[in-house]
Image 1 (cartoon, rainbow, N blue to C red):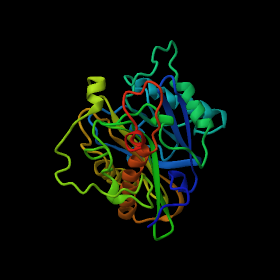
Image 2: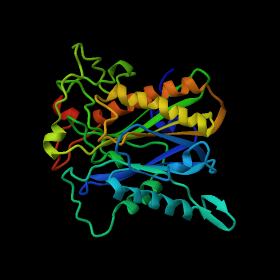
Image 3: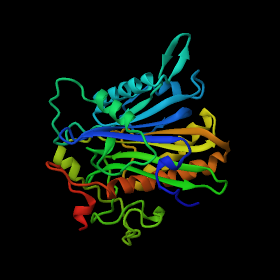
Image 4: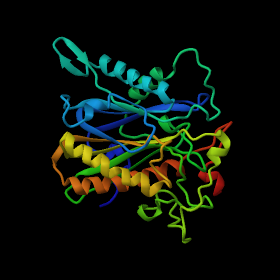
Length: 329
């Protein structure tokens, strides 16, 4: 297995990603869509999730495919980014047909970034507009770090962000991951230099420093975020995708497996204060694939994407926490 040409989730055939953010707000939204509806499911392992339209992704539910997926900051306010994406899809004539009605189907998930020192005293919820702008921005290339849903993200010790990675499998199909990393836990080992995901790094994609040679990792649970915010409201939200043909039930199994990537890259993970959630989708562009191998590849991509999110984060005025690049300049 090796990374795709862009090392982004958009290496998966048909996938497009758009971002929108407000630097004063210190928040933003990310929309994943495709030219055609796609099969999708979801799995939640955090104790404090925030989501919309996820029940319809269960394998036994009627809807076979959806039109877009949304990741957003803003806590419950950010769920309105799904409405903005729906507006864009409706304008394009996209959606589930029920008689003469057309209903775009847009599940989404949010992270908590309301206490990150951004200006939050809005009169009108800004996330619908951010969702529409992110949908309109959808492309096969996009930046990482302090963008989209990762704009205001904070890990336990430093700024989080938006990350992505991909792998091409031996059968020619592709797997990719997209993540907004905002966990309770740390993404780097004590000392702020080495990434927990380092054993899975490819081609120096997040610095090439290798694993921390120290032992006893995970015992220290220091958190700059806790000191800065006096609370732990967080979440890692992600999407993994493949162009191999999968059923909804198989997508759900891939989502379950992909959570291993969060655990490999973030210590600790899946806590009561995290809302860790993974969507998994198939664009059905290629023949049926090996579900076990796709799930494994998804977990590797997600671990790498989390590290890339933090590695690519950039400083901004008023930040509560430093960036990895600042700490390791």
